[in-house]
Image (cartoon, rainbow, N blue to C red; front, side, top):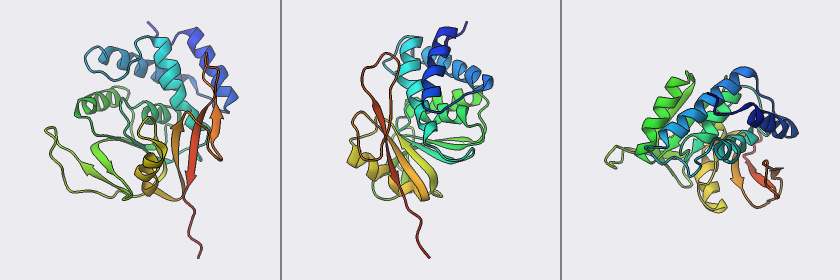
Length: 221
């Protein structure tokens, strides 16, 4: 049985089209499978307060896909900081099969779900990291199951670094922007407007949401 019904898909397609985003049939099938995984796993591990397919699809999956409207290229390197149930990173990986995605999450109980669902969905080019981002550093602190901390690691910078419900805007910017490669951007989901932000609206809502964009300019030679 479909989690994303025909009616929900049609509703989603209308919103995505308004944002200049399109998904093929394979992406919709994977999105439906992922939604089913979230709702089933949510019975045992609290991934989201959403309890119905409609709420999950509109508030999380469709919301996550809005970022595709501002991403460049078909195979970007993406980092989802504080990814939780993986909504942003996994949905964008489904929408952009050639993207290379890293999911960064500090809560251990969510790591098992992320590893399980990405394997079940056969999403290659996606990596799950149990770690915490370090402010102003472009590094993450690896974590163990008992809270043990490893040596901080600095990955190769990413084309885009995304965060949703991570922290207030100034702190979210400090956690994400240092990971961004020159010419790339930090993309932060916000409820309030900011200069240069991308505005979009979800079905059933009467006000816009925003993607705050913080580009990292290339150094001039």
